[in-house]
Image (tube, rainbow, N blue to C red; front, side):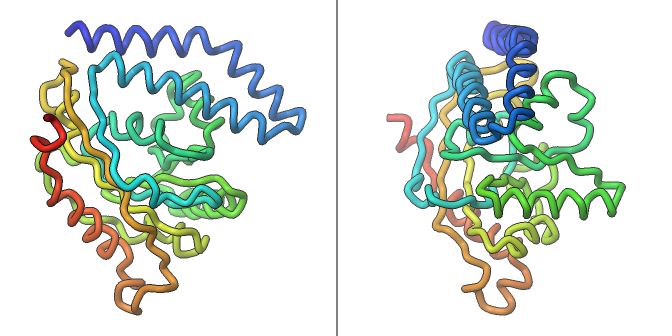
Length: 248
C-alpha cells in the first residue's frame, strides 16, 4: 500500500498546489498567448505524470515511437486496460494532445481545469447532439495542430485481456479530419493497479506505436470498418510482445 499512498498523496498535493498555476494559465490564454499556454500545460502535466510513474515503480519499454509524425497532429488509438494507460501514453506525446474522456470527469475541481487546458473533450454518451458537437470540436483541434487520443473500446476492459470491439463511430474524427491514425498497443498496464486493487505494484509495461494509418489509402471495406481494421493492427502488436524478453 506504500506506493498507492505515495501516488495518491502526490496527486492530491499537485492538484492543491497547482491552483495558482491554473489561474496563471487561464490568464495567459485570455491574453492571447494560447501556444505558450499549450506548451506550459503540456510540460507541467508531463512532469507530474513522470513523477507518478516513478512512484509506482513502473518500467516502460517503448517501441516504434519514430512512427509518430512530429510535424502534424495525429489521432492516437490505444487499447485500454488501466487508468495508467493515460499517464503512460501522455508523457510520450510530442505536442499538445487532448484525450476523449467521459463527462463525469467534469465533477472534479482543478483536475477538470487541467484537462481543459490540455484540450481534453468530454463525452456525454446519452446526448447525441452534445456528442456531435464534441466530434466537431475535436476535428477543429486536429486541424489546428492538436492531437487527439481515443480509447475506442469505450471503457477499460476489466474481465479479459482481450480487447473489446472498437466502436466504429469513435474513429470518425480521424476520417473527417484527414489526420493519420497511430495504433498504440499497451501491454501489461493492468499489472500496475487493476490486477490487485487497491495496491500499486512494480510492473513492466510495453508501449508500441504502429505505422500511421491514412484512411484515404485504405480499401473501401477497411475504410468502412476503420475501427476493426485498426484493432487488427493493435492486436498483431500485442500478440508479439513477450514481457520476459524486455525484463532481462
